[in-house]
Amino acid sequence: METVGIALLGVGTIGSAVLRMIREERERIAERTGLFLDVRWGLARHRERVVQAGLSERAATTSIEPILADPSVQVVVEVLGGEEPAAAYMKRALEAGKHVVTANKEALSKHFAELVAAAREHQRALLFEASVGAGIPLMVSLRQLLTTNRLHRIRGIVNGTTNFILTLMAEEGVPYQEALRQAQELGYAEPDPTADVEGYDAAYKLSILASLAAGRHIRPEVVERRGITTVTPDQILDARTRGGAMKLLAEAELADETWRLRVRPVFVPASDLLAHVRLNLNAIELTGDRVGTIVLYGPGAGPSPTASAVIADVLDAVRFGPALLPNLEPAT
Ligand SMILES: NC(=O)c1ccc[n+]([C@@H]2O[C@H](COP(=O)([O-])OP(=O)(O)OC[C@H]3O[C@@H](n4cnc5c(N)ncnc54)[C@H](OP(=O)(O)O)[C@@H]3O)[C@@H](O)[C@H]2O)c1
Image 1 (cartoon, rainbow, N blue to C red):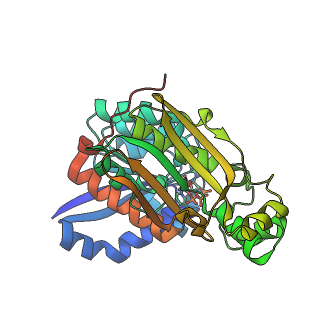
Image 2 (image 1 turned 90 degrees about the vertical axis):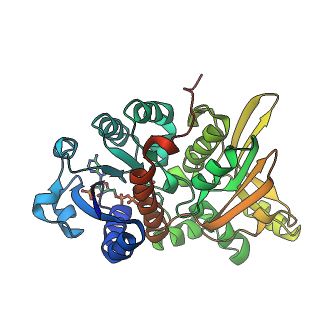
């Protein structure tokens, strides 16, 4: 049995769910994989949060340094959120010879090529299944598809919060502010909902997916982006009368050798599967030249689906190392 030393950067919603799931599933995982998961460190802004999450005083830190210096840490799990210090910590972890697993779409979409290059240079894994679609096995599917396909279209509903708001507005006639309030109450939307409702979150996710399809880092800033704050109740009612729905669609399309990336609210007719994706669910449609069009559908957020993807990545990082790294040229 091999013990895998893990450092958790962040012990918030996702970090503490990862810790809990490791505790609950450790024996079964060990039986199935021969790998015994051991969380050695937890990093947060406040040490007491780490202890509250269930780690010992000795395992709690507010500094990355002891983690980088500890040779027993093989995998660094980054679930801090935001661009910095997350991106810098991931780069330093790779340089220190650690595998990195992240659920952070913002840091990844802004530093994708640089992080992949650091992982390749140091022959370490960089895995990010939970960064888009949480527990939906999207990266693993993309990796498989891209071995034999050229993808030329990605379309999807990748932000559960806005889809929840639009569903409530359409099905219950609830005004935008009230739908947003309910999303916040249920923990779907942050107290500051800007990243979701203005389409930034969807743009980060689309940038990651399109970068993988293109084999080149496509930065989130190039996404043409419009959020849902401009959608009117009349548009929503009209869409429903026509049998379809207004949806915040993330769409990347290759035409004349150029990728065009857009996030915007659009009318989706009833004949389109995406019109039927309700509440906080996600669906991503991938079109390749050999496979045709496939759709992946499921819960795109939440502690449990996200933690299950993160833990699967930890195991793959140890088993496959840099073999699963994508081909990614720097942004031009
Ligand atoms: N929530 C979801 O459903 C979901 C789904 C998929 C992906 N994700 C991604 O997972 C990541 C984590 O999300 P979350 O919901 O778990 O966030 P969260 O609840 O806000 O937790 C963030 C954690 O990171 C720590 N932290 C933040 N900034 C830090 C800094 N500068 N230095 C040290 N520690 C810092 C916080 O420390 P304190 O506790 O001391 O404040 C907290 O423990 C994000 O990238 C998010 O996009 C989330």
